[in-house]
Image (cartoon, rainbow, N blue to C red; front, side, top):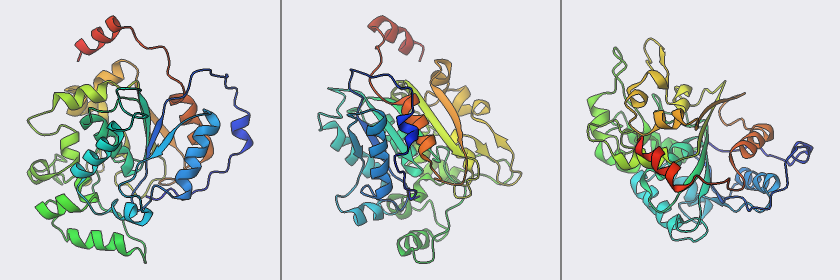
Length: 323
């Protein structure tokens, strides 16, 4: 979804009782949503707000093409495995973002949130401190979005699916299909078709029998993982996916994260993150991506900025032995 709301720098920021930091804030990567582009005004406003709150913040809006129109098209068409690998190579080879030199922070809007999480799990060349997502689909979507009347790119992507969301071509080329989750209408459990053929969401959620220990360890290394869900979100179905909840679309019964196997068996490190106080479940008022400066300022103040004192090596070793 496009980040369309302009975010003028209001007196709210200047009124914040923030201390002056001598340490430099960590770099921030931002991944936009479906139909948006890295050079959009809304993304530029977010970068400006980040620098206003934490002066000197280096912000990199993730892009899959230098041309904004091509970058927007890539939010609908492309292979997520290839896209994540490309972003990983770009960041890993840049000394400002590589894990060889620094940790970084990450903020994802709508589908950009689960893409950043997938990047954290699969990219060994970066080290992320805090991940903040807004209106994301961490447990996938049960329905595809409606396209605008004149949004021909969106309509083209939806037409390509044609009831065959888990076909090989669709899973390799249509981005929203790769985080579509099909469940049994009676039991609410994921279908065999989904588990066997999903190119992205089943994989990064470690839902298959063979689970990646690396995905779990990398996500568990976060200091903070904050997930914002919009109270009146009608675009993401179900909106509770932003908190990893499962919704039976027949009965509409919601199974929260902590009652699901992904948490109880700790498939991707969420239970570990919760035990160390790193998981944050937050609400935002309004519909999908109705972002305000107030809610963004809250996120920047709470989760981003200069590096805090690191754990010593013994403390780090004890923590990872618990995994």
